[in-house]
Amino acid sequence: MKAALYLQAILLFCGVFFGALGSFVGINIGTDVSNLPSAVDIVAILKAKQITHVRLFDVNAHMLSALSNTGIEVMVGVTNEELLEIGKSPSAAAAWINKNIAAYVPTTNITALAVGSEVLTSAPNNAPVLVPAMNYLYKALVASNLNYLVKVSTPHSMGVIPSPFPPSTATFNSSWNSTIFQILQFLKNTNSVYMLNVYPYNEYVKSNGIFPLEYALFKPLSSVKQIVDPNTLFHYNSMFDALVDAAYNSIADLNFSGIPIIVTETGWPWLGGANEPDASVDNAETYNNNLIKHVLNDSGPPSQPSIPITTYIYELFNEDKRPRSVSERNWGVLFTNGTAVYDLELSTGSLDANSSTVFCVAKPGADDRLLQNGLNWACGPGQANCTAAQQGQPCYTPNTYQNHASYAYNDYYQKKHSSGGTCDFDGTATITSVDPSYGSCTFTGSLNSSTGGLFPPPALGPTGPSSGSLMNFTHFDTIVALFAALLCLCFV
Image (cartoon, rainbow, N blue to C red; front, side, top):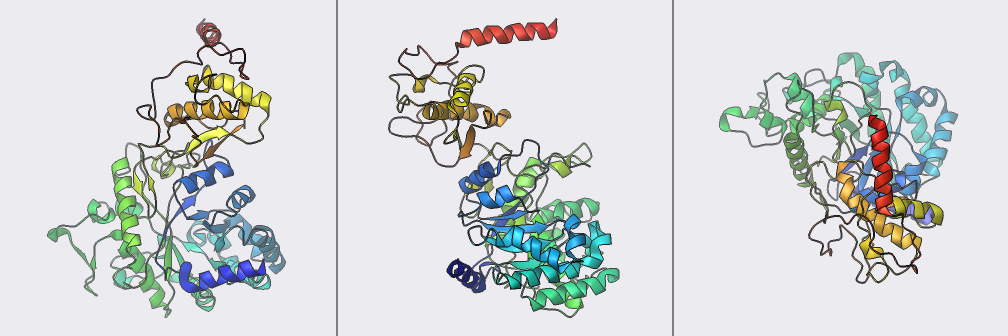
């Protein structure tokens, strides 16, 4: 284990975290989600979409276990509620590190610890214990010989900078200067980073038309719309860069330098209420795709052009259980079934709203009785086309519940996931990025499929099952009659 830890430390020291080998785009994973997929399914989606960096807002044992041996870099978070105890007790901090980090590294590639979330602006009563908590957690990492692997910082909102425009005159809210000074001193001493949440959407909405929409979306600006800092004469082609530079200048105002900024949250909502017209699919797609191109060109903002801006997009799924506005609940780039809300070009892979790159298959070791129930439902009321799994057809062998259920589950999932169908089947199914097709058996959704698309015309249930077949499919006409009877009862 020590050898693995030292190797990981060397990689980190060589600049993986700070972007010396290039900046990266990661993604936030929130959990205020209806029908949140299992941790295993989420990781399968991450792997299928080639997402290599994630941020978890809290510590979830199932997620950290599922992320083990994937190589995906993980930022974990201490919640604002946990701060109170940790900031008052070094032993509580040590216990937290032992339970939530030391227990998982190096197999789970945890590289950063975000202590709290926007504490100064969203939980100001916890501010007095923020810096002590950071120190106690760092000392616990040192004691576990993990301080070279896991960097400690705390994410800030733009709310700590009351006047970010123009960037050259930006300063922190003076009422927080003492706390922020201590935070910056900690970051400098531990060779860590300043974590910043940057939301051009929010700043654009607040500006009431002062700034053009193109500026917020990374779109080219006409000569009459150029944004220039009157003091430095820097041209700002995006609000994103201007906000990051406002933070750099605020840090410099407190006489600190050499502390890189990473953006821990940014994004654009794709749906809003009647009074939120700029929350749209087109704008969200434009913003996030332009953001990715901007980050991956490895250049920084005008004041720090040689320091790339590593960035985490907010967020993987819509957190539809969150209160407040419609837009607040619609920042996700994926639906919970793994399909993309809109096309998004990542560094190594892409999220395509018109394609499927994941499959739904039976879990290994699932109970045969439950698999048969799931099989009967998928090929009956689920309207999966199960013909290929019948005797004499290409997907009949091996003649097992595991194989036949996998084919039926996947056919149902590929047809129904865009309208809310899930991959569960009473806990017997899971999502995988590995194409389960074999020999002449081609699963629906495979790139090798010759069915004429992801959604071929359905055959409502299997045709002519042989008495020698392992499967005992429920007759579809009987199911239709039962459902019809139930519907009639509902309307009586």
